Image (cartoon, rainbow, N blue to C red):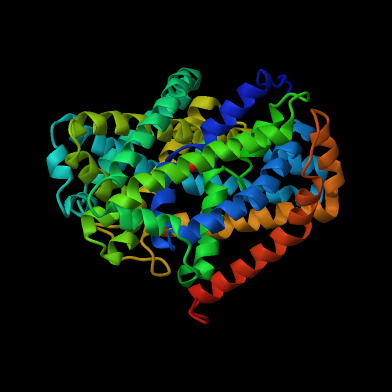
Length: 451
Ligand code: TRP
C-alpha cells in the first residue's frame, strides 16, 4: 500500500492503544473462570511466571518485528524471510476463529445488561437462570447477532475512533468499579475460603492443564500469537522505549485480570457453600456469580447496570479491533472494497458463530472432541493454534533472524535491560516448554495419557 503509515503519538498513545486491545473479555470473563477451574493460587503463580518470561519476550519480539518492518504480520514475516510467510498466515487465522465466539460472549453481556436495565436483576441472581438462558433455541442467537451487528456497523462506518474515545474514559472507571466489586465480594459471608483458594498456591492442584490453560490465557489476554502486536508495533515511533512500554501493558492487563478473579472467585465460595464443583462451571461462571453479588449489594441493580455497560464497551473495543484485523487481511489478499468485505466477514462470522451460540442448548448433543462448540473454538485457538504460532515465532526469531536483530531494534528508542532474559526465553525456554505442553495436551486429547 502506498499510504503512509500513521503513527501513535508518543509512548502514552502506544501504551493506551495496545492496552485497549489487550483488556477485554479475556480479563473479566475468561481469566476468572480459568483460575477457578485450574487450581486458584497455583494458576495465579503459573500465570504470573509465564507473563514475566513468555509474555514479556513474545510481546517484545512481536512489537519489534512490527516496528522494524513497518508491516502487519503477513507482510512482516514475508519481508524478513519468505520461507516464514506462512507464520503470518497462521497468525491471521486466529482472529477469524476468535471473533465469532467472542461475539457470542459479547451477546451474553448485552443480554445481562438488558435484563438489569429492565428490572430483572433479581431473576438473574436465581439459580439456573443462566442455564435456562443458554439452552434457549433462539435467544442466544439474537444477542449474538446484536453484538456482532453493532461491531460490524462500527467497522463499516469507520467510527472506531469515536468508540475508542469513549472507552478510554470508561476503562479507568471499569478498573475502579472492579476494585469496588472485588472488595465487596471478599466481605461476603464465606468468601474468605475463596480468597484463600485464590491466593494460596497448592501443588496438589497443579497439572499439565494448568500450564496449558495459563499459557493460552496469556496469549489470548495480551493479544499475542495472532499478529496483532506486530500490527501495533508497525505504528510505533522509533523513539519510543519498547521495553518499558511492554512492561506497562503487561502490568495493566495482568492487574485487571487478577482483580476480576478477586471479584468472581470469593463470591463463588460465598454462594456455593464451598462446593468445589461450582468452580468448574467454565464459560458461564461470571454470569452465574456476579448477579448474585449484585443482588446481595445495596443498590446492586445500578452497580450491575454500570458494570455491564463498562464490560460491554471493553468487549466492543476488542471485537471491533478483531473485526478490523480480519477485514484488513481479507482486503489485502482479495482486494475487495471495504463495504463488501465488511459484509462478507459479517456473514462469515454468523456462520461460524451460530454453532457456538447454540452449543449449550439446541446443539448440546453435538460435541467436538468432547467439547461444546464454543469451548472447542476457544481450545483450538488458545491451546493449539496460538502456541504453534508462538513456537514458530520463537524459532524464527531465535535461530533464523537471530535475537540480536530485534534487540538492536528495541534499543533504538532507549535501553533494553532484559536482553539476556529475552534471548534465553526465545531460544530455549519457550520453544521447549511449548513443545512439551503441546505434546502432552494432544496425548491427553487422544486419551493416550491422562494428565
Ligand atoms: N485480548 C483481548 C481480551 O482480553 C482479546 C483479544 C484477543 C483481542 N485478540 C485480540 C482484542 C485482538 C483485540 C484484538 O479480551
